[in-house]
Image 1 (cartoon, helix red, strand yellow):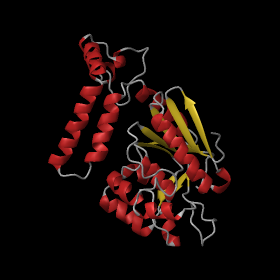
Image 2 (tube, helix red, strand yellow):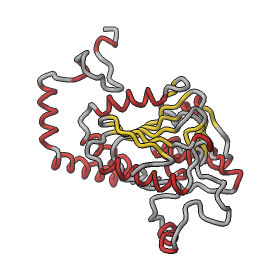
Image 3 (tube, one colour):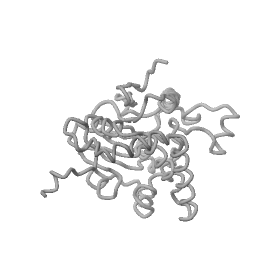
Length: 285
C-alpha cells in the first residue's frame, strides 16, 4: 500500500513512521488515521522489524492531533453505526490511528521534532522513549476547544509523569517546553534542533543489536502489570518470564554461553555499544 499522509520506511530492523502533513502541522485526518492503522499493523507483524521510530516532517511540528478543519457536524473519522457502537465500547483502535493498541511489545521511540499538542501529545506518550528537540513543546491544547482526550492521554500521561503532573497539564491545557518535559519525565533526552531522528536512529540501532525476546516480554510485563496490586503484577511478570523461557530457551542459553565466555558486545570496541552500559574504562578506574 502506498501512503499519502504518512511515510513508512524500513531501514534494516528499524521502521520509521512519519506524520507527513507539514502544511497543517502534521495533524491527523481520516486518511491519516487509516494509514496509521495500516502502518502500525505492518510493523507489528513484520518479523524483521525490531524497533519503530515515530516522528514528523519538518521542524515546526511532531503532530498537533486531529484535523479540526473537518465538518463540525461529522466525526473526525467517519463511522458506520457498528463502528460507532464499537467505539463507545472502547473496541476501536483509536480516533487518531491505533492509539488504543496496547499489545505492540516491540520498542517504540518518538523523535519529537516540534510541537506535540493534543493528540500529538497522546502519540508521544504511545512511545516507550521520547527524544525531544530543544525547541519542542507539549500541551493538551484541545482544552480550549472543549475537546477531550480519546487516544490514550488520560491513561498514558499519568503513567509517565505521575498523576499530579498529568492532572495539571490535562486540566489547565498549559504548554510546557522541552526542559520542563525533561524535568517531569515526559522527555527522556533533549537534543539540538534537527537532530532527534539521528539520535533516535542511533538508539534504535543499539537496541536492535540486542536479543529481542526478553525485551518484548519485559515490556509486556511492565505494561500489563502497571497499576495492579504487587502480587498480581508479579504473577504477570512470572507468566511473561515463563513464556520467554518456553519459547526462546535456546536464545537464552546462547546468551548465557556468551556471558560465560566473556563475549559481551560492550567489551569490544568494534561492536555497537549498548545504551546505558558504562564500560570499565569510563569509570576512571
